[in-house]
Image (cartoon, rainbow, N blue to C red):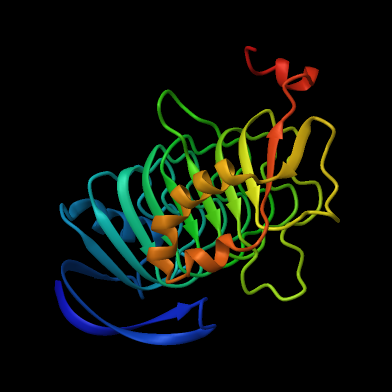
Length: 266
């Protein structure tokens, strides 16, 4: 079945309301209302082109290993969405559950809402954009692989153990629309031994482990942050100038710390 033009409802974190959008496309349509995860994934694999999944309700392993397609999901996908993703693009119009982008290799995952725990587990390439909040252990074991540098941007706040054992890649947390909620939970950067993290905060009340260095972002850092945020802000409707007007903190591993030397050649 093919879709052409219809009104879709998505959540705007910028306006904190649901909005209706008229979207034109020529994509295959899958109604997931009465499909278990195996049947849904079999249907998806049989479609050679781009696809829309409607009425998604917790089906797991969607688009695992998918390449060369664009996929839009309406509803809430289950665990391990886009696991081992390889040069494909997935957009979720609401929230997603745990382990989004597990071991992602290349491509783009755009989640307009919030996500569960362990997002980007061991991802080694591609982009993971989250409009809302992330649960515990986002970016755990994230790593860079050859010339690939994974990027995770969280628009809201992140739970405890952010960037646990991070070995490479970029994590950015913006703390937008979070009210009095802290930008990150307890024990961020535990075991971090590679990569870089940017938090849109002075981080004055955050306790970092001894094996990392946290410092205010300078002009060079802000230029790098801008390069990562440009596409993200375009996708989610945020004003990049407003975001960059607030202070950022940069967190990197301490190269003198012996913990880092256990994993990385200096």
